[in-house]
Image 1 (cartoon, rainbow, N blue to C red):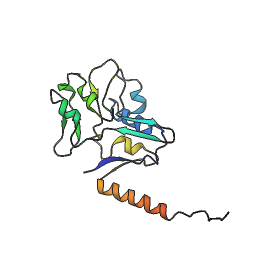
Image 2 (cartoon, helix red, strand yellow):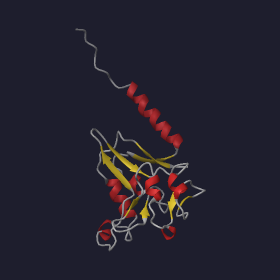
Image 3 (cartoon, rainbow, N blue to C red):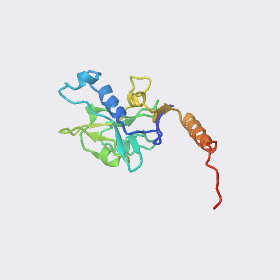
Length: 169
């Protein structure tokens, strides 16, 4: 099963993923059309800048999802086939338990609303909008085995970088 993996060493903090996510979840599905929608589209990924790096945060679709465990109506549920944690707006009370239970802080409410939104991995798309929009490939939609291969490849190249000559003092 594919997941969204993040390589923070590649993230520029450009927020292209945030914009693409909001547009993908808008009524019009277009950047210019979404600007004029009565209810502004909401992003489901958040890029935060640190001192030396930026990191995109989105739902990790946890194996033991706290948001699902605390939801009194079953509005938060895990899809059995894909393992994706989804939200059913029609069943949501707006109690906010899921927001409090999320360790990543990525389940949020729209301003003026109690109904939450979270990453759904863009089920109508082959690749989530955030991943497709990332210009540096900091976001990858791959299996965990492929992610480990990417890590090994990245580390192995570090060993073969030219090193400055050692000088004695």
